[in-house]
Length: 255
Image 1 (cartoon, rainbow, N blue to C red):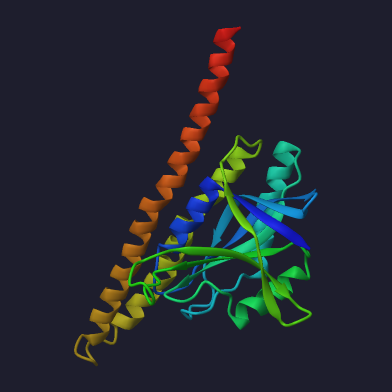
Image 2: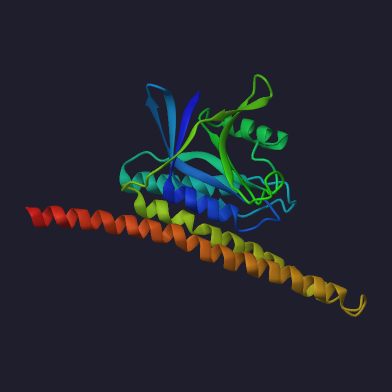
């Protein structure tokens, strides 16, 4: 049984930026990291996240595909080979815009199916844009697993820990920037359908053209927002790398 989840600060920030990129639909991604046994039990350390494109366009549904899972496994294998440290896909994350942070029945079923692959597999949920109670925007995050014996879920203690120098640093940073590519891919697929919609302009007095323009503007806004937010974890990672290099240089000067 999973006892705790540790997420590095830069990865947490990257997932948060992804969750805040849109309030109209849920977003999702896969988690990379490792498992370790401790006195408290099995501990999952998440040191990278790979955002995924949405295949189900319903606003309250997200699911990963076998192809996306296979691509994440390739990222994990590349990190393992480059560092000599075993890296695997340890879980998934998704957002809950405007609703509670607790998992839905669909989330629990999805988590249960993923736990069949690995008993330590964990789910993270970011609740964003929730103004229902306090009228003040807040973001909440939980880690959970499915309790298949009782057809419900159990919460797993979650910690955000400082980002430490990691042998897989180059492999950790690259997936965080995939969120931009995900939105660009979705925007491209949406734009491909726009000409067909605009062909209806003559028949409905331009209503379809207006709707297509509004939808396209919405996608452009999301892409721009995420491009801005994703620079923050990149900058944080580079600053950490710089601090590490400066510390090593200070040691060499001391010698």
